Length: 185
Image 1 (cartoon, helix red, strand yellow):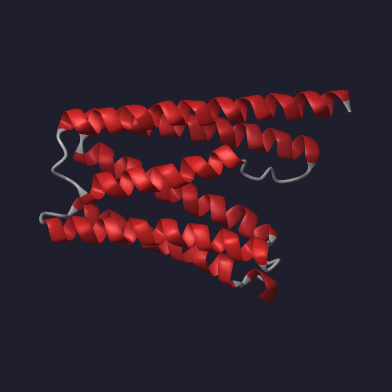
Image 2 (cartoon, helix red, strand yellow):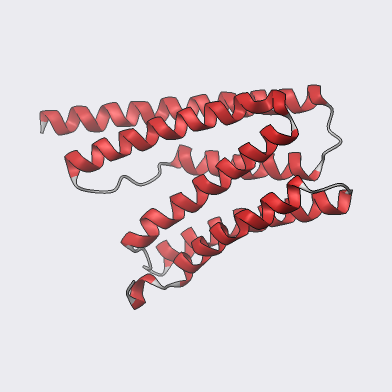
C-alpha cells in the first residue's frame, strides 16, 4: 500500500470495518436501553464516517483505487452485519437479510461483468447513495428503539424493502444501459 492510499478517507473506511465487530458484540449482547443506545451510536458514527470520507475524498481530490474498493466494501459489510444481527434478534425479519443478499450478489455480479467489459470500476449512483443514507437512518432507529412493536417494525422494514427493490431496479436499468452502450459502441 503506497502513501497516497493511506489518506483520511481510506482510514475512515478502515475504521468503519473495525467498528463492525464492536457493533455486533454490543447489539447482540444488549439488555438495557443504554446498551442499545451504545450500539445505535456505533452504527450512527459508522454512517457519519461514510458521509465524511466520501466528501473529503471528492472535495480534496483524495479518490484512490483502494478507496473505490474499500468504501463500498465497508458499506456492504456494515449493512450485511446489521441485517444478520436483526435476523438473529427478530428471526421473522430474515427476509430482510435474504433480499439484501440477493440484491448485493446480483449488483456485484453485474459490476464484475461491466468491469471485465469496460476495464473500470463502476461507481455508486445517486440512488445507491440515498439507499445507504436511508439504511443507516432506519437501522439506527430500529437498534435504538428495541421496544418497537413487531407490527411497527414490520411496516418500517416493509417500506425499506420497497426502497431496496427500487434501488435494485435502478441498478438493473443502469446495467442494461451500460451493457447496451458497450455492445453498440
